[in-house]
Length: 393
Image 1 (cartoon, one colour):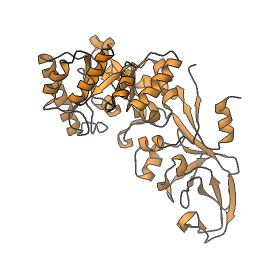
Image 2 (cartoon, rainbow, N blue to C red):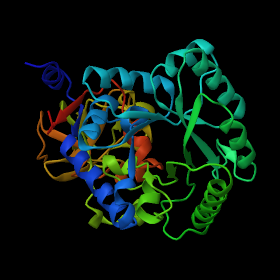
Image 3 (cartoon, rainbow, N blue to C red):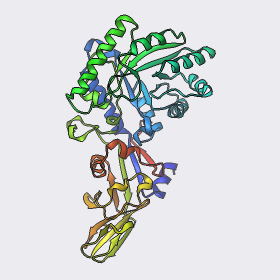
Image 4 (cartoon, rainbow, N blue to C red):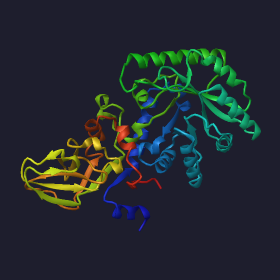
């Protein structure tokens, strides 16, 4: 019996990761990108699949492997710790898909030397950082592919768009850096026809046109995350960076169209482990925040905020058992959650509990928690085993 199978038997709560759904979503996004592209340049289009934050909680290594086998051009990370872990794994699988790190460079020269030897695509957001990277690359006789991030309105990181030309001029003088890409990031791409998103697109397009006319031709030009892919693709941009869509969701369900065909990759499940008859007027869980309004049965499920299941679901969350919804009652504990299964329960011990997934969208959990799907899936802790199904190999 394999290690993962043992985990399923030992852990009542686990996250089932459907790699077939992951590939389905990748090809949906790829097809959408192809349809919106200039047919003359269809072969000059690239996809960077985002696997940061442990692939939004789905498991970076196994998801990255599947996406590489599906044909992604890049695997996107948020920092160099993720990048090193990912590239080490890819080597063991004999996969040579390029890692593109969108995080800032480490301060330590020692760590710079480590990452320079990995041949990533490196993000540049500061001229001094570029000079440090160039110096280390020169000392190791390396020429590195770098991509410059321009801030077109997110106001997070990147060169301000009105002064970025001067910065690029300085970076182009660094002989051990090859400036292959230019990119920016949307602030409101999930909303179709949003004025600020349109303004960002136009500003970035204008910037690229001027930069390519006067400074340098870029192989990769991109701004689109998931929302951008669905709403703001334009021919000048030849790379996309899908993230949450790969895992089956759109950033905002208000604008999500089920016809997109995206399928949830994670099914978070548990089991009923204890059932108790509770008289009317009794309190449930910590803080006595819920009192039974009748004689009823309470089922206890071994999952809680220690697993990343939100404590904010206290007295307002739901789960699915045998295709029927049951309400969470009382405070969500670190290791347990309780549900009211009624005075004549149809639920029994060992019944499967759907916390979220294909049968109960994570959108619902996010709404009850006052947050977004990204946070829910990304917060599922390592205490919850990931069980991978429908593997390519």
